[in-house]
Image (cartoon, rainbow, N blue to C red; front, side):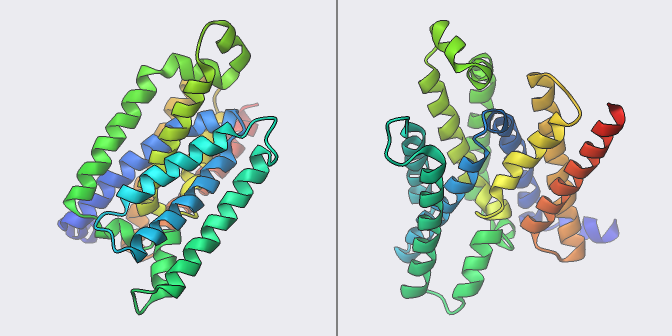
Length: 276
């Protein structure tokens, strides 16, 4: 405890806990919708797109990566959502192509137009979030807080409509709802969450924050609202515990948080079987 309080005296550690908690909460809210709609893989694909855009921003020496990464990721989310039945490349294939292509393109740029002596270290940090969460500035923290409040506010405001679109799009359309519009809203919010989460766990691991808490909650509870609340609670607990273990044990932040999520999923699976 003495060592922990010593580390908490540093502003960058407090920033990491604030940002980590907010990102974990936002990820879990929309994660339930993606899991139930079987769109879980879209988070992984968009995270690779964000990695490619971040590499471009790094090569161009932009002051803020978010100015390029956020619009590109949102645009790709919209394009993926628009791949309908008549598209030549179907949804899952389109996600795979975009995912692998963006990852390869970004890594190629980082090597060909290297602006750092340690390209491997930069790539590893971007992919796995090993140090980026501990190098946040006050401006980045404020941006994260504002966007997180926006994400939570939109989810609460359109909760009933997102619920309807999640379980039965046909019924939502018959009831006069713009199902395509709310699907688009979900895709845009997920894009924002992924860009924010890259600083926490990296682009390769961000989809774990979206999927694991939702899966863990569904092992214990029924009912959309209860699953969403429990998913958010579990996600925040795993993020906080993961960061504590990372600080005290000098382990990679992103990987440690994901390990906590996996452990939580295992516990919930066993508890669910025992309950049944």
